[in-house]
Image (cartoon, rainbow, N blue to C red; front, side, top):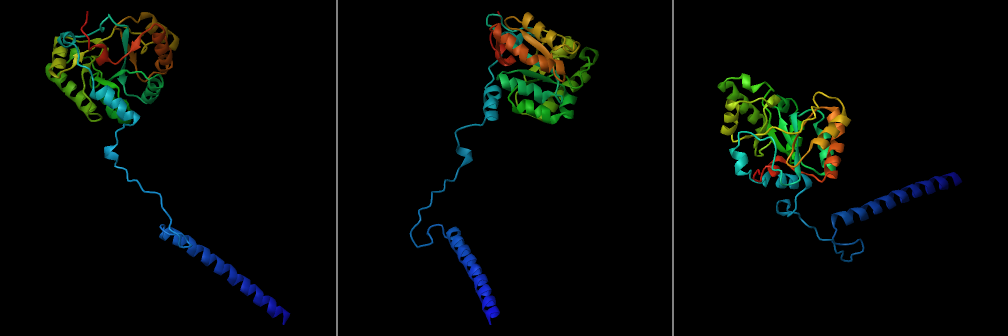
Length: 282
């Protein structure tokens, strides 16, 4: 008899637990299914829901801002720049310089951009067509970060050794490779090895490209010495300087922060080529 009572009590306790569980579950369900009422029948004022129309927001994220500032509002090039066969240096009446990178993109491109963004400075990248096709993500990162892009030929051949038809094909393939990764305006061309003739200049102008060389060259493609690279650039920089550096080189990457800081210490503003060349050359 006693054992039967104990068994009945256990069963009753078990059912009590189950009933409690069901009641709690129903209460929670009612709150979720009917948020306008509380479990005791009192009116519950829910927080208003705000539907966001993202197309009407009046702000841009960081990437969009850089694109607006550096791509969509490029200053017009000066008439003297547009009329020149080629440019080695910008105007010398302002304490400004431009940093340019050749031969990219490479796997190190993202690290170059990280340094530039850390210091919040601009640069211009002269890209090779086959490198864009090999590293399209790195090329897009340059464009999406708002940096100016110029062409540096399709496969880095010496253009002065090519006939007119081959030259035209090289320019078209180079521009096509860039247009596959960005709609940004392409203004500048830099011949491989700095080697050009009238035919090269004429075809560049036909494609509305200004030929840009340089006046400060630490030959970083030849010297794997970051201290020398940084020291040479800072010592040789002068008003209007166009600085030539190369992508894909650890020494150049390591030298870049010292170059930026050294130029700043000398009072230079570092600007993209379009800004450097927007004034009349005196």
